[in-house]
Length: 530
Image 1: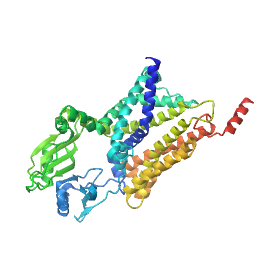
Image 2 (image 1 turned 60 degrees about the vertical axis):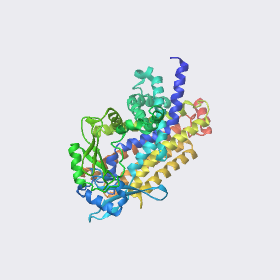
Image 3 (image 1 turned 45 degrees about the vertical axis):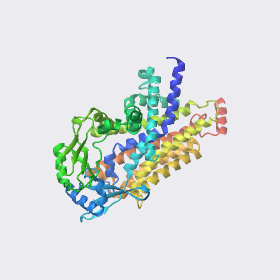
Image 4 (image 1 turned 90 degrees about the vertical axis):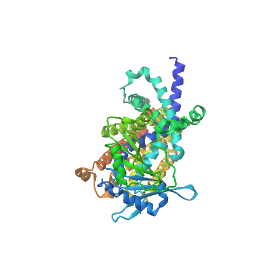
């Protein structure tokens, strides 16, 4: 391949990577954490311990109590059945408030059987998940921004493969540690990128499909299929269309009978959510969703019933998937790691963190590539890129760790503290990065990340009164796992902070990471000459 062509691909890889890297770092770091979404739902509760699951026998009593207090909820509501990690039986209903704003209701029955509209104790995991698919932008449009960035991400991957394919075997396991910092970072960047390439290709593709799928269908919907495409693929996207009310009152079957009908239609299905539409109407419909464990990547199952008489309208299990449904559900399972249990979860966690490092190191390599080696004053572009990388990447790390701490120690309404705490820490880190020299900011922000991350198990200990060691003896794997990961990452951030400070004081003075003054550099040269 011509050298000019190689240079073009290097330019594409570099600039596309820089443009997408900031958002993708947040998406990968937050995504790695949310791989353990269900387990962290237990950790974010007040006690951080798993509780016995509530009996689903009270499901009908809960439905009756909600519809008596709020008859308008019959149009559509969600019944959440108890599970290992979310042991409470609850009913969710979104009411349209003034100005079109939605008011979320989460109903439960207390021990005395009285209806309560409770606010979520914490929304730590849900907020981190929103960071994963929106990178911190408002979710209503942030998801599309990240989808477009994932298209650029795929372009960066393709150009990177073209550039480094000739050196694939030669430099695959090369990690030359020494005084040449750029070469060491380049080796680490290339090795991680090549070894995790299938993972990144899957993520670039699946992210674009899951976020931009409907938009990508729009030209075909109106220009090729005359507005009928969504009707053709709708059955692959959703279990059933929402029915309209008939206006004829009719009794809806009790929840217990509907559950029995679901089990008969899909034996072995673990029902998680029951979605009722037009309850008490002749067109009443139930859509039930859950997991069914079979030897397939996708495990999601759905059963659609006529809620008035229990007639089975549709069954969606892996062996009954259409080609389109199998593609979409398998892609979702691959994206979220919803298969293979703990082994896959930990593999995805490591690959996700490695992916975050890939984008962080890519920005640092750009800074190093533009370094002037014969002068201490470095280009402004390199300094600004270094500061932006530190602020955004380390700000998101510190913000997520701060959320874990606040979810245990903050007073009052935790979801508000968690949300505002993340953005306060994030923007404070960005401002600090631009206010300080890069080397100072890197040391201070990495130290902040280490302190906040190390505080996570201490905050849990303070809130629950149970230390990680006591939890280990009691067999509380979630508490022990979170504490162990936090300690490992805190030690890593601390070590990185020390390394940055050491390099600033004693490393190459011709760098944005140098802390050496011009006088000290000149004196050092004179001493070397003598």
